[in-house]
Image 1 (cartoon, rainbow, N blue to C red):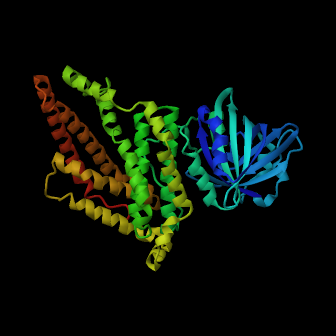
Image 2 (cartoon, rainbow, N blue to C red):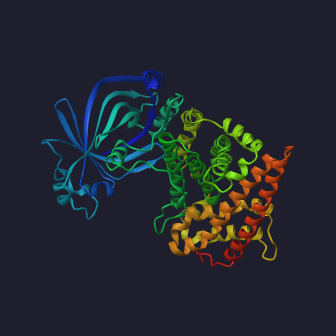
Image 3 (tube, helix red, strand yellow):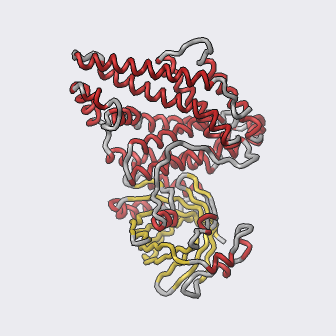
Length: 506
């Protein structure tokens, strides 16, 4: 058995000729191996039983040599992929699961039945160029460049990938090489394997953006440290998934999901402050702030698009004032283009941020500043401290929600940050509790958050109207203020119901 430890990158055609030079600059020695034409077929049952177990079964032929490969469930952190892999010579036209050592299979897997029902699902065919390099520190790393295509159900997707795999030595050198490579524009870390892409193509299930941030999957009995790892890894993959969704189909809402993922990661640092010293995340927090600043325009852009849509109730009113329509049109014209955003996700600073966070997570860098108190906290079951986390957030929130005081528009806008933090704690740890109770408690608060978003929109539109010497704009501003007052009244009713609800963690 081998365990792959590799980093995967996606690159554009313009960068392909530059790869050999970059490798030579980095390495002590380089061995350039002959290019190979690899023909691969991936097998599963009609019910995708292997896929359900996160097992990949592949046959590969190059010239007259063929082999079959099993990849078992592993771990993906950022662009770092780690999976157990088993290879055997292929002696027939189809793979044979029974040829592998039975000890490798998950408990309860019906190997014989699956073996009888295997058939090819999709294929990947590509030219592979390989370099074996040795670093100054003595590590050996295989660098692989694949150019070709994934084919399934008559559909084709291009493959243009660079993979660096640790053959011998330390992960440190693998990350150093990755850091060297990401100086190349047009290259970014890749989350999805060829197999994952092939299954989506074969099953006609394109990658779709999430509607919500969702909940971090936590195992029963998870410790605080395990919950930290799960939350950060969830956040990285959430960001990378939506980065890919944006390349597939640019959308403002997809960019908002990237912002959500970054916000979840930053909140996780705060939530687990007992075991994560601020000093270990200072650089990361600074870089995430930079990224959020680069995307700070997205929310207003969503507002403008939503409220000037012909399907929206505000459309006719807003368009009754040509001056406002022109201001909105001018604002849309100066928004970054899809090409600008793709350049952001290709830039070295963004990819170095994802790479640095990946390394921070893989190397458990937060442990560098641990004392005995932090060690004890890390080993404590997270369900024992989750109630305390939620209670603190809830107390901070209730301090902003005095029972006998009617809240104004300004009060609600000021409430946004604390309410979002309270809900994010639920995204990190809510899986520990009953789903129905959790949903019943969170729903009215989520409604209030969406109300705050709409208030933000109305406030933004009012700002665009202010200071304009136009009767039509003054009329619209008055109309917007009435809409805001009506919205606050509705939110107050939701608040009366919400504050009396029984918290699901108690």
